[in-house]
Length: 89
Image 1 (tube, rainbow, N blue to C red):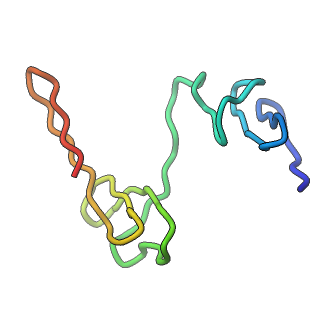
Image 2: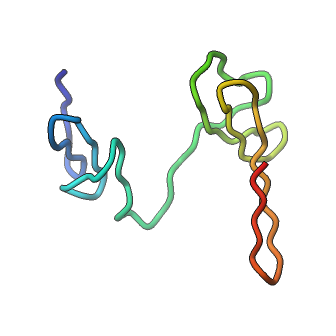
């Protein structure tokens, strides 16, 4: 497989790990040295992709982050309290 890279994007090793902002990626996609964020796909509930793959996206209908676990879409819930608890549904 041929991957053309540009400045700041690096591929390393037989596993074709891809690093953005690092010359030594430690996983399939490594952005661990970046400090800004990752832009996620966004769409309405009716635009959800289908299939059995695992997905993560922002749902613009519900205004929430959601994931597809291979069987169903699940909204990722976050609740902040003084103890910093987080619930992932």
